[in-house]
Length: 117
Length: 113
Image (cartoon, rainbow over all chains, first blue to last red; front, side):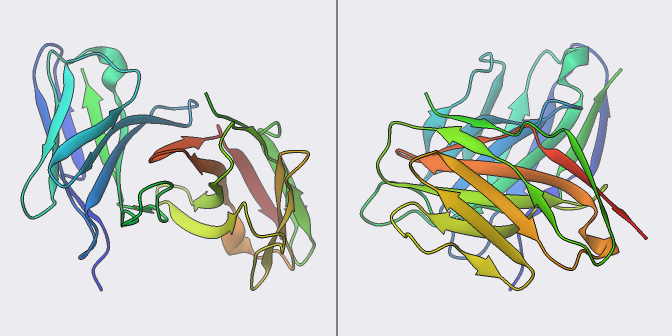
């Protein structure tokens, strides 16, 4: 079974540009999560999508946005890039319990390393 | 708000010895899950072990086991017979409420040959 995949592996942009990162979840998983992992800061929750809808959002400005497609893959867009956006962006997927409540285990992709010059 | 605290930025262990990584948490939820994830250098984050809060029995996965103290809100990871491949960043995580996951800042584990 294929795991979570992310593309591209590395992305280099300059300040003010836009970056688009992509994620494909494990087959059968409907939820996709995005995290930012900046050096020394651990994982910061960015966004959660399920069934095409944004379900939850972390404490990030609106220039961080995304969407989930009908096939459950997801895209993270970062507009007006700033130097401090340089980080590893991790995508994770999980199954959502039919009864709601706490999620099943999240499985992570290899990440996209975004560098802003 | 839920919080996860890992108070050991770095730990080291001799190969074949046992090491325990600490994690404390806080949540107002009664139903939650706790996880330990491992992130080797420049490699993918992988799940090590998970614990359901409603289960009193501590989870075990081969050489990895947890000491879950619900009343103390403590969730430590014990690695037995440490191997060189265990060297990594270890993150404690809490999933509580509706789809909300909080990670600790990580503990860097060094394994000394």
